[in-house]
Image 1 (tube, rainbow, N blue to C red):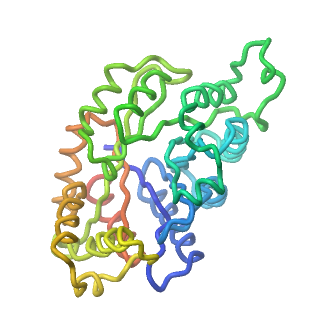
Image 2 (tube, one colour; image 1 turned 45 degrees about the vertical axis):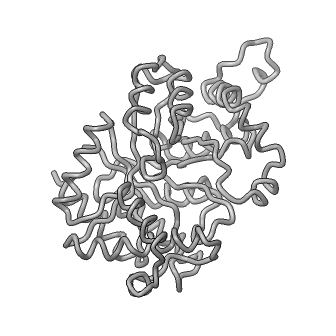
Length: 332
């Protein structure tokens, strides 16, 4: 089974943003040693508890501190940027780290309405133009403009020997259909979708058309996972991220709270219901239980790969979670 890592650079209570970003680097290095396939960083803008607005900056550092693991964005939020600039940036990374760079793209705003306006005051119009934007981006990556197109005169230099691999990220049937139409690999966010994920992925498989460098469909499913020595410990660790979600939903600007705070917090009935619903999307347990659930999800989605996102208060607990999973599922 291929397993990968999606990191959101979470900031815990008592941790600085610098500490959170350093923890991301350490996680990538651990993933590299343990045999995870890829390490993606997410893009967020002025969101409480998350430290990374620019995955490409972090990937430049992470690539220099790792050896084998693929590195990529999960995702570049393309409505904020022009395709040529995206292609330049990821061609540069692919030149530095040949054969290791993924270019995941998405269409979410990644932040509040105010942050979105500050980044791109015509965001909604840019979202509507996503299919054309993807076409333009792919043509830049694969040097495929017709001779009469003005862009045929320029290249997003440096041009690497091996282009960054494009992925489309999404949580809906619309994104699956677009990935299939464009012949792109597809990453489905199981951990953040309330829709019928397996049916959405089936739609992608059924509608796939050959792309520039992809002859058959390829699917990664991103899943929220917390693993510990015992299921009871894993359940307690999971409370931190669950309380964080509750407090963010109330507009509180906080980092990831401690397990002790999460256990003692006075939850309302509605908040407890929200937590129970969120747990249904998570995989929580000891290594054997996590392995069983992940294998079941992989089969359910017919996925080529699972991508794990883990949020805990203590970095040590997060690293151990990935270590336990690797020992159970990636050990040779």
